[in-house]
Image 1 (tube, one colour):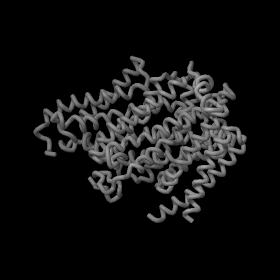
Image 2 (tube, helix red, strand yellow):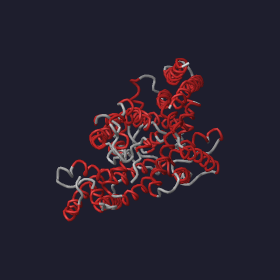
Image 3 (tube, helix red, strand yellow):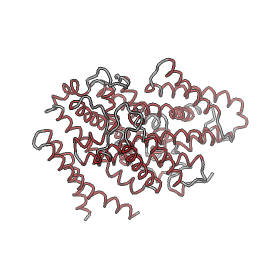
Length: 59
Length: 464
């Protein structure tokens, strides 16, 4: 589970910055890059929030 | 006085060696603290101030470097030498009554800062409701929707701060890498929209389309290279030369961990400001008449929903601890009041301020004012720590003399502020340049006045 959450967070971060780079080089248009970034945000929080809650519970 | 070590915060004692934090923790703390909602405002305001590309890029670098050196060479050695909070050290030097006045000023300024963060978040929350955004020169609220959104956000932020925000603070800390990447994504997308297609285009576009220099927008102060340097150096003056970060750096293992502040300065106050600035440049390039600085719509235009969430989160995560700290400062004045009530009061003051767009539109001026007011007390601490022992004067004068109001410290603070006021009023020195003369004046005055006073009371001073 821990690995899945970490993978989700890492994918989220990647999908936050990569679409902006792809838009910069002209590979994707703006709406596409924005939707990919939204997906990145969801993955980031899906991976990170449970980890934070887990750490808080352990204390 | 009660010893609060049981709370684990070591408010009234030195941090024990076993509780020191790693360099990584200190870097994380600085990076988190300085990727805030207000960065979305400050970047665009540089363009509104008519700054040129060289002045911004080089001026920010120099100013941030000076800020890092102030943390590392002035604040961190005191923090790691004493390992006390600013408030406790001030109490030992100045006495409880003078610290009450300092807390009042500190609490009020924290409220204004939190108000600016609430306003920033309001521009994002109001966007889906088609709320009209306040313009650059608006002082009063421009619509009922603005007031309703600000009050709603202020109520939520204040309630969470009053209930204790540990979970929120941890989510906030965890969000920093994502927020920073959203800032960076905003900048990359804005660069493309401004016509940059490769790195070699950047400088030409920066000079011709982004930071063009020339006259500022109506109602704004013109920023030169020196404005940028001094602004970047002193926007956190209260923290470094003002010594508020004694409370953070006292956990550092070595004094040179003060250089960790570079993470906050060069990530938050360099890259994030530049990225936010680029968003505003896109808006002005598309509709030159639209000078509104509204972070929500600007970020949404570049990165969509992620931008809106980032603006709200960046505002929330910094407004929460700021309201909490304001509450603590006020509670120190009336210790019998419950922390819940006093934090709600601080949140209400911040929300009331946030209703007026002038608070956030004049953020550059306020930040200069904030540093000027609080910094002189940092000079008092610096003189007490670095010079008193060498000159045969007594450190922690209030504690050793049993005084509740150290008059040299109080006089140094007030005279330094009066001197700054006079410089501003009669010599035309702008607010951005007042913090340094204020700090030096307070330090010199405290040294001179303490020499006079301690000569008279020397026989009454308790042994260290």
